[in-house]
Image (cartoon, rainbow, N blue to C red; front, top):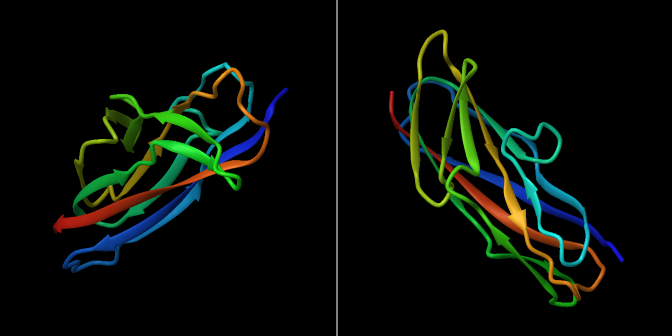
Length: 149
């Protein structure tokens, strides 16, 4: 038996006293795909198909933080636990990749010539051996705050 698609939607919010235009562009959701009961499934932040990805364009100093769910939930209330490890997120600026713990807030700086950051998020789904088949989802909230120019 396999469990149907498990996906996480990524929502973005921006705030701050920006002097220049800042864009936050969600590019894809975190998707675990088909899960097998009793078999943990890990999505690495470097996974170009299944990891969540968003792009920040602009200049200044930014903080990124996540509100992470503890589980995926089906419409009937069944749950699949989720784990986000200490290196489950990355921020990439001009091919320089920095891993960080998505439970913690991290900062990065965008400058002229380096005015784009890509943030990726992975995680691990832990379906139980008797997990019921179905569609499971959860919401991740991503907060991007410009703290300086």
